[in-house]
Image: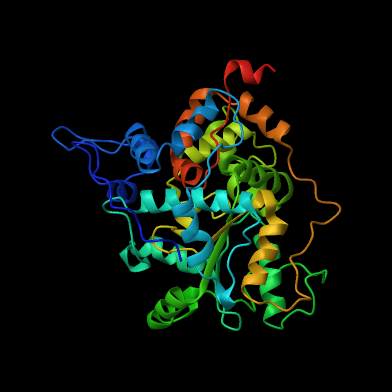
Length: 376
């Protein structure tokens, strides 16, 4: 489990607590009437997180002004000891002391999570959440009673392969290499399927993990996949996006030619809590303050982190995380950078507050879209 949260920091003078503001209004569109107390604007949220995470977000935020370099942050011996030695994993396993990169990254995320989640008003338990948020969370946590773990799946972060692994562990599939179209519902157990007392028991006693990805890379992956390949998404979302944001689109657009800026405009106008799961912020999908995850894996080192989790839960040796298919071609950083630079900067400024907790909690840099960077 994560170490005990740090002492909560008070909100800036005149501002309401961070968690209450996040639950009450989308970050990107704060509104206040005459006489109403000031809302927690994105700049105030940034200030609170910067202070809470001992300067981590300051380093992250500078990524929008200059090229990011590897974080020169190393945990102190005192804090690192709690991570390496005293926090036990399923089956008595601990982190491999030789994997310093994993230790540093997890330490950054753990300390940032403790600090932000220690803010007044932030949820401490799934039952602290409004009903809709709790429903979303419980529908995204998969259960393995045989191996005593909970996995919060995040679309576009290898969740199909993780579901394949769960089906192999449950004996439903013989191998992770079986070539079948993934059924995302059948033969899987979700926390939402269980009674409240069963949910509480598993949250308290099972190993809990999720995997995360650079927020904008995840959005770009969803855009390319859903609007470039999936007819259902083109008809359901693409046609509406074109009608809403393209002048002269006509009453019945096909929805198969949505531009990336049009997609971003759509996200700016959407309530994060009501978004489709493929572009809903990870914070809203997995609620890392309400659920104390034991491990946060990275898409950037997916295979290593995934196999580490399988070792921790004592999966059989023959069960491994599936390798990427030979035909799979993820979007390059160059392509993402090109599309971000092609979008209006004001659009990115409106979009980023909706995903700021995904950036800050999981230590991802904000995009560098300065004029100099975009003309390199």
